[in-house]
Image (cartoon, rainbow, N blue to C red; front, side):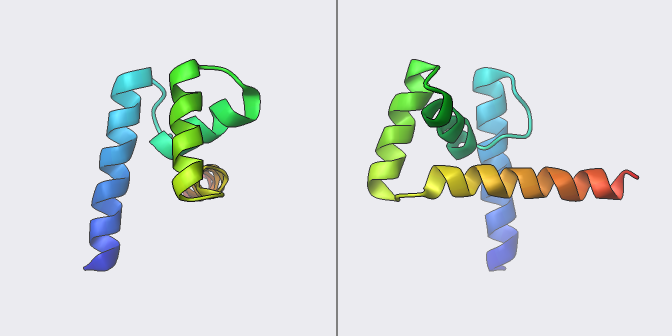
Length: 78
């Protein structure tokens, strides 16, 4: 059940981020992590700073997780 709930929240997160920025497949935390890395998109950057204050390393971990998830899908599509 825990894994199922995680998947539901993950895809709600992806949906929300996609509706806001029109970049499908990324989570909000990944978008914030990219803004922190590259220093662009003021709103995502500020949210990233807040997330990192509460949970240090979370945004970078989310980027890694999104990348791993995308690589698994690409592997399935071969």
